[in-house]
Length: 190
Image 1 (cartoon, helix red, strand yellow):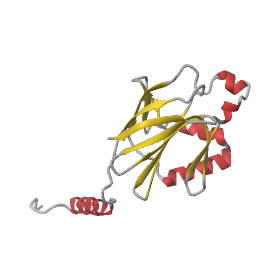
Image 2: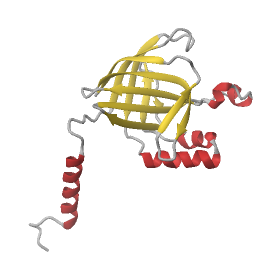
Image 3: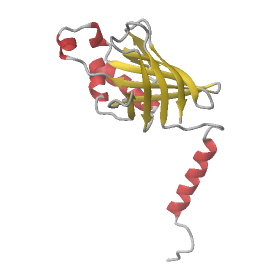
């Protein structure tokens, strides 16, 4: 066996790395962390006014997986999706160095030099919400919707009670129960 020549497996790996590097958008800055300042609109969340927001990301959700979630909702209903997302962990969201909540869905889209990041965090339904079927029972997600420029700076909004809509092709949208979102100011990606 000649050890002076690379194996076919090593050559295939090197070729794949070169192709993926060539396909990456020019100037695209990958990030794994978002930091910002979260500001509550009056009376949206009792007792909270503002705090540091810290988001750490470990991955994104492909459109094909979102399309699978859409099929799950069609076949088994919205709360089957909530059960499915309960064990997923694509990072965490914390406020003022609190315990981080796991992120279940991360969708990133790019358009005209801007990057939109949607983060979905299932919130724990309290027994009262489930047994009394309150309005919040139908809005079991926290949605963070952020827009960043090429330098990784931007703004965002947090919707503490939202329901998801996923199209058959995997496009994600949401509807908020609250009339006004919480604002994320001085958002920075790193």
